[in-house]
Image (cartoon, rainbow, N blue to C red; front, side, top):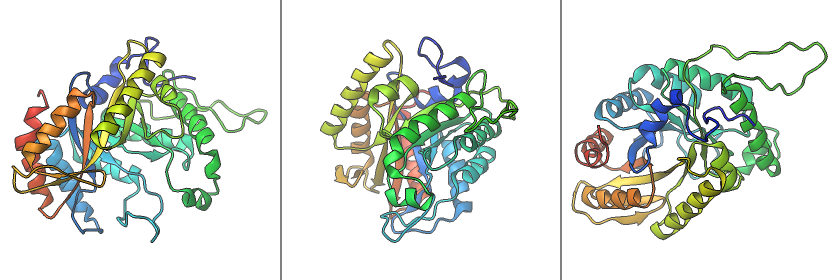
Length: 325
């Protein structure tokens, strides 16, 4: 299979470095934010405000903005927030920000046609001048598969085959793999052509082995777990990288819920998928994560405080401890 963002040595291609290396760098930890950024208890996002917060995050030096793909909502789902279509939002972010990387966390690869995904990825990459990282997941809600006419039992195979089609379309040279090739079918191209590679990132496992992920992806993005479990998960990842891509750098990232206390000295307390903590304990947590091999953390903010206030405190007090520039 052609790997769109890796060269024959298993390293990221030079023109994929801009976005990927600012987010994932060996021996370092960078910090991003997940949209929408909402105060605790808010379920209806004001997307004009979200664009303003995205511009603030860009100006204050956060390394990435992460966008979820939530095709449908149900009263049975734990997350009642109405998310914009990810491609529409990514397009708006591309023209409202200048430096920050834009990452999908994650496009549901199994429920969208892979050629549509590739076309959208090229478009966002072009609009953002190479700041887009294409995170791909398989979705974790079986009822959505039925709604889209898919069998959730086919999730693993769909993920692999769709990844291959996306990677080929975004590769160098790009190659369109049609679903069908009737007699006399033309050879297709994907336009616009872009001078920027779009790196592919596995978000979650997609039903694949860690060895498969290490061979095909620039890294592995996963959810927060308690420290001992996360260390074990990272050790499993490093072992897979050594087997599947020896001597190559493969990133490890974590999505974490954060309730940042107004008391900077408040001790860290575990909450679902993250922490409630003051900034001093947060710095200690992130320092330990960096030492343990985590290269990027994106915060899913949840706080009674105004969101801009939290973003500014993180930028003033936390980012300087981890960002080199």
